Image 1 (cartoon, rainbow, N blue to C red):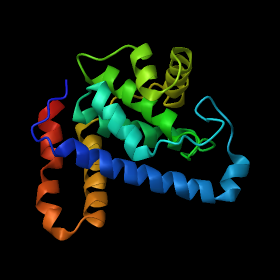
Image 2 (image 1 turned 135 degrees about the vertical axis):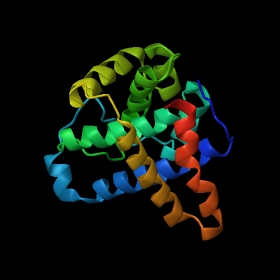
Image 3 (image 1 turned 90 degrees about the vertical axis):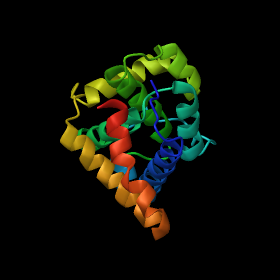
Image 4 (image 1 turned 60 degrees about the vertical axis):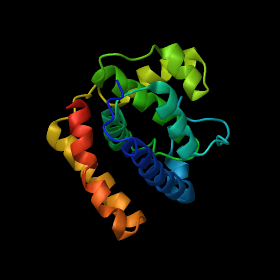
Length: 188
């Protein structure tokens, strides 16, 4: 688990993934037309969580002990889920539940060792029953399409790298170029 070559890789990955998801959620929150057509699901909370996406991902990273690859694969799963479920776009009411579920499913699929649903539920601040429902709905929402090819993995790494470069000064660019290599060595 958590075979991290550089201790700085995961915090950067968490930061930029959270930034990307925050922008997507905020954009979907502002799009009133989508709100009309969104269906309510087990992923929707009654209120917006008070914990930021960044803090939530840091919490998952701290306690889930999953490999760095899991966060990339979770990102792939989130994208697949929203493509297959257009009436459930990521927004501020569902992003946290989608995150804990996608990371848990990715850890179960990618890592040799992972925690049970009760543990992930505790990390995510939800009940075990909710976690179980979220997992089932997420898997059906993905059509059980869990395999991520190396090419797809690299494409999503490249997308996050471009996100990183947009948000950071150019002097940090060199440290980001090794992200894909580090993640591949860690688990693929």
